[in-house]
Length: 560
Picture 1 (cartoon, helix red, strand yellow):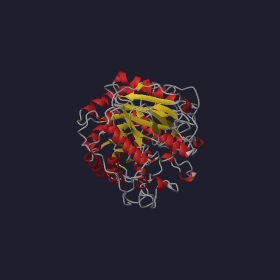
Picture 2 (cartoon, rainbow, N blue to C red):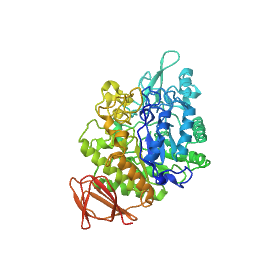
Picture 3 (tube, one colour):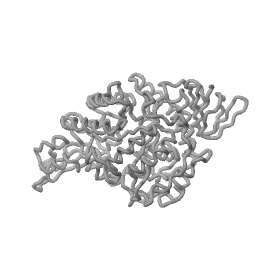
Picture 4 (cartoon, rainbow, N blue to C red):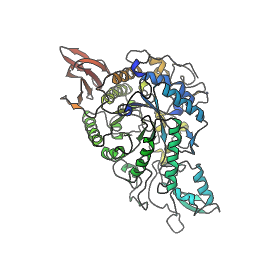
């Protein structure tokens, strides 16, 4: 691996043992690592656990509280590891269980917690249960652990119902039976290589309770639950009665998503987690129609946090943002759970590119847009997010202001959704390009053997090396923001904001002694100078108690 660039010294308050912060997760800043694109230790072009381990001091110095690792389990990699063949093994491309153990131990020594992905909705088609189910044929007890059904039509040639895959096409695949004849169909809400478990079968629950204990015993501090709104399907697997079902997601309760039965599973899991010391947590990836339904997942005896996808999908617009902020806080308060705030992840276009484009294009965009505008808004959105009460998530590379790579050649794409349904919405590779660490090198410090997805020319000028110590850089803005947030009690904690009067297009709120102003308007605005400036995402000017806040800029003031 190339030499690591120097990093800014860690603030004293950022270096704490894992056991020192009570209820740490309520206002935690959690950093998502996509292992294949973070750091490559062996020069094979693919990131790995040892690469992550060597970069942990960088994350400590950045000022985050925990690291969430996307899947590194044994997998055929049909969907970047979200098709798991063995939940208790590390895929050789990422290392070994010993590497996972070393990573967890080193993270704890640096005051960082480790959250791992759990994928309970579906397995890989190479999972032992599924392979045996196919080999044993109709009537096999193993088929009952999945959703196998006879087809419709005269010869069973039609899928059992009209459900569509999230990746495009039907959600059913017909198998060839051991005798060579066309046979039953199995359900896969994602790729055909990802058959859905039947959570009505007790063996499935038994297996996952065992998997939880395996990783808790390894020392992980929690789990991010993939497709937490899935698992349980409506009784009888009823037809939905419509096509283009993806357009309905997030607007209605679907027969295969957000069914009330999932909550009994999470109450069982919570009892297991509570047996372990150290405040371990669950985080739900739950796409629900409303934030109020999301709150069901974080009731006191269920999960701890749930991603706020309503916030992620909100445009850079003061009125829309205020509505989502209020609804989120109002929904979480009755269940006693912290709100979460997130701007980017491994499944959506990076927000520096989303905000560079006109509103209304969705969360997967193939247009570069106005790069300067996008970065300015991304920096402002970050300070707004970090001033809100609750926990915040940072996706690797956003602290560098990375844009999405929107011009990847079609032949290098690996997103399985790209190869189904004529490639609709299959452009997640753009946010997964390996991040740059150094100005130069075969992969800008990612590793010594290139990178699994091509990096753009000029990527090195956005690298950690290029931005470290550079006044006004996005990396230094993040470092300072996280240090200020940790040392300022009024940021992060709590469950409410006090809105202040502000011009159209401007958000202004008070949290104790801190005032946050975010200008989403297209021009500068005059605001009261609320005290001493703690931090600003852009240049502001103050004269005689008044501040001129430029367009797409957020400012933190303090009266203390």
